[in-house]
Amino acid sequence: MEKKAFLLLAIFALLPLLAFAQAIEPQPARDKNVTLYFFWGNGCPHCAKEEAFLGEMKAKYPTLEVRDFEVWYNADNVGIYGRFAGAFGTDSIRVPKTFVSNMAFTGFDEFSGGLVFIGGEKAFLGYGNQIEAVIANCASSNCPSPDDVLSGRALPATQSGGTPISIPFLGSIDPKTVSLPLLTAVVGLLDGFNACAMFVLLVLLGILIRLHSRKRMALVAGTFVFVSGFVYFLFMGAWLNLFEFIGSVAIAFTVVGIIAVVVGIVNIKDFFFFKKGPSLSIPERFKPKIFGKMREIVEHESVLIMLGAAVVLAISVNFVEFLCTFGLPMVYTKVLAEQQLPPLSKYGYLALYQAFYMLDDGIMVAIAVITLSSGKMTERYGRALKLICGLMMLALGIVLILDPGLMAFG
Image (cartoon, rainbow, N blue to C red; front, side):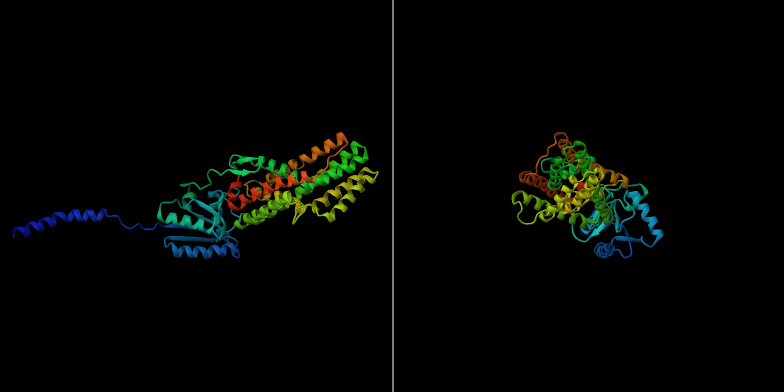
């Protein structure tokens, strides 16, 4: 009897300890609520793909709440979009746009990709795997919500730091420490040293020497260089408007990057296997016509007719040179389109690009006018230029394919 009483007393004494142990035993972690804001347009194909993707995410993450707003036909939703875009510092024009945690994603791509921050839009590229990674992280840990950013309780996420880019002959460059004007100057100057443009100018200067007049030579050659630069400016402006229209969709970076890589490889091939296989040079069938127009210039006595002929020659040559010269300006204008700058500033950078693009031409004209002589575009020199430009194109193309966020400045 005494043993039973002692056993009952021991059990009652241990009950509080057992209750305390149960209280402190780790409980299974519960998923946290995640709120995602999705702004879309009725008829937008990328929006439809993301809508299906978010349906899968809601099934996979039960605590995910998707608040979607159609903004092409609903004025009230446009106002809501504007408030979120203003808080995150991004635009309220392009769709789809996704806000989850303190991150804004622009566009949508169901394929996987790295976390890429677009400086021009202050948003990340909308790769599905990156959006899901944020959802999964916030479902298992404490994260700020888009509402926290909207109310000022949290700051929007931005890219920090940068990985240096290795550019042939220029060494390692960190885009976060290099200004856009410097990039403009470097790429513009390299573009000016393309073999096609320099070949045409040197031939023209060689013909103009027959005038034995420095004044006429300077007027005609200067007009040719200026008009060529202006047409090139319009050409790059068209590229810029195209990329502004397309926006920051992931596939655009990949397409431009692939084209740049192909152009770079073809130019590098020309260094080792000149005139063998595909080449980005002035087609041989056009050269007699170009030379004929050059000879027409010196046959006229009237300065005005000579200048008019130089203008026509500059315009026609730019169209003929299209395949030879489109690579670097295409890549540069894509990078420029991503910068968060007013339109006039972007065209100002295009003008700066042209200034450096025409710098070597201006120097060549000045030397020819002073000495009344001109050099020749030798095969060795032309192949060297193609190698340099090819390596530059290859490097920039690889960057745009693997990590276009590196080309965001400021």
